[in-house]
Image 1 (cartoon, one colour):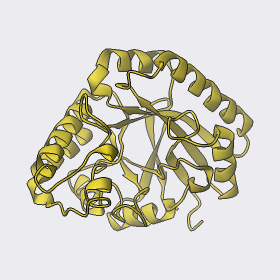
Image 2 (cartoon, rainbow, N blue to C red; image 1 turned 45 degrees about the vertical axis):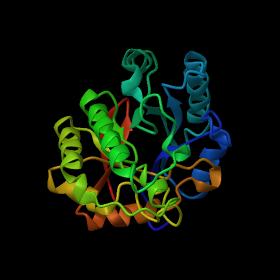
Image 3 (cartoon, rainbow, N blue to C red; image 1 turned 180 degrees about the horizontal axis):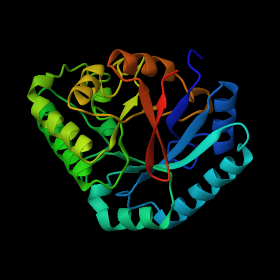
Image 4 (cartoon, helix red, strand yellow; image 1 turned 60 degrees about the vertical axis):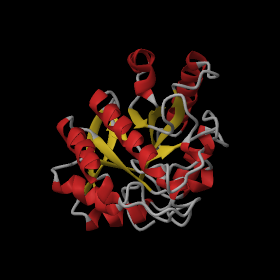
Amino acid sequence: MKYYNIYDMHTHSDDSFDGNQSCVLLCESAVQKGARGIAITDHLDIDDKSLNVRNFVVNQYIHTSRAKSAFSSDLEVIQGIELGQGIYRKELSERIMEDIKYDFVLGAIHNLENEEDFYFLEFTKDNVKDLLTRYFNDIYELVKWDKTDSLAHLTYPLRYIIGKYNINVNFDDYSDMIDEILKKLIENKKAIELNVSSLNKYHNDFMPGIEIIKRYKELGGEYVTVGSDAHYSNGVCTDIDKAYDALSECGFEKFTIYKNREPHLLPIV
């Protein structure tokens, strides 16, 4: 790896509905790649009515606790969760975050309320603007809620709008909305994630793109977490070095990790 301070702050074990391998295998891969830390942030899509939430959070926390203990001398294991659609079930979401002592909670929107994940939607030139407007409105409500630590993959729908349907998006149409999101993150002293999972696939860009990270910096933003969004052990830490390169280009000298729900700035070295 190009850098010494490699932390992958977004990974999924087989506790995620779309995960594939154990926490132990994720950690082994991180150690083999020379990482200093990994956050295991399994999907808790709180609006999934088929999910037994209590069983999930208990089992996932036990698994990450075991990994943390097993790798204590080789790797910093950060116990986390990717809380999807938390604003759609606020009371339950808040109770879980009070009961389970996570180190790190990623906040995400993967679908609009009572609708399918953007992965399953059929995008057309006629419906993209309405769907993205509704999405960014919900993202704003998520950051205004101010219960999570870092905003995951802000431009998530572009994976499919551009990557699958090849529909161009004019971001001038959403710049004011995105600015309000960034300003609210900064006001609340919360992080934005630089997600690398779409590099070399989908629309071959970071999520969000570098122009948004630069804008976050211009507005006074300080905290950026970096994650591979790996769903297999061999994807852990992939392209984290490219993300650090990009952060440096945007004027950041440090990236952010979380412990006990508090941000810690580490140098990009």
